[in-house]
Image (cartoon, rainbow, N blue to C red; front, side, top):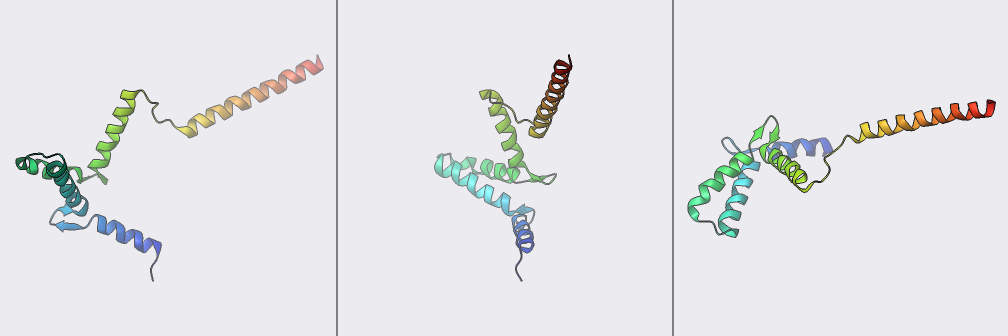
Length: 120
């Protein structure tokens, strides 16, 4: 019978399947896409095709369980956000906790001030 976990495990296995020895499906597709874009769309000379092939292979390499292309893309996004001056990612949970604690302190301080005024 077909189940979601079965589909997920099959998808992961196909993604990391080796086409040629030591070449995963991700690497193979990146080699094809980068070579087609470089030589086909950008009109790069044919002698640069090995450079695109090596770049695709290296970008699809899995290092510590993470594809190198994803890590490079993350570094590029952080660098661009810094260049543009966009705010960096923040820990929303920590910000929310600090705001909640500050609001509770103000309520407690306000309650004591109100009782002092009423009694005084």
